[in-house]
Length: 296
Image 1 (cartoon, rainbow, N blue to C red):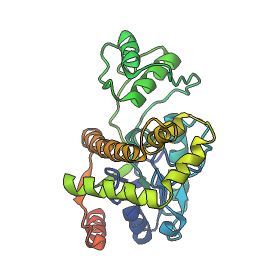
Image 2 (image 1 turned 135 degrees about the vertical axis):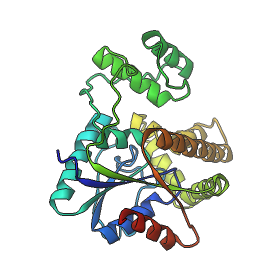
Image 3 (image 1 turned 45 degrees about the vertical axis):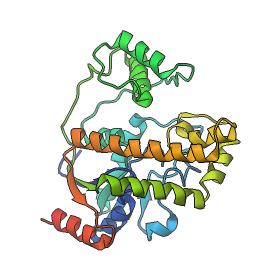
């Protein structure tokens, strides 16, 4: 693998303008875009995941969107293989690969020298509470640094142990990049971001989030794909009569804000990000600032 292959990776919290920036950079740098969001690989999950629309794509080629059905499983290991293949394909066309998305583990798995075993055992542990799951993890891995409330990562650690008989915390961590990556992060003041997230949820509802969630609810499929993104499980509570619509909407907003905070923390600790304050009044200013930085 050519370690000098240039790759641009756009990160940042939900609702900050990553999709918009990726399109502008692709137009100006002869690029093609690779999805780095674990929820956007699935078909039919469009509004809740804020998936790029055909209109927004402006003719730019996009990869690894809508490649799986919601009942199918798709692991980080699968993504690692698929993403590296797409980087190679884009490079062979003489174009610039641009990764964009909010799933940190996907980004790290694809761009760093991360070793994954092909995981054949995949338990969802749906019968366990968060506390029971965490205690199960502690019993096999007392050194885990995963937070009890991060159910997704706790399950990942348990599955890793089920498959390899070794703990995730003992796995060799790597900071060796396989490509010449420029990490571009978009940021803004917390109050502005939270306001944008709240408004974006309202826009999602106007665009048909309730109908999209009901369609998925009616399939009775409760796979990892369905239960991972924020937006569906909260509305399922409403469909089940366990909460009001207003309560479900407020929960979506609250969880989206918390998710944005976690994304900041992860990006700051895991990858060398070059942060840019977004000019929401004139996004072209942000695009120019990023392009100038890349061309330095």
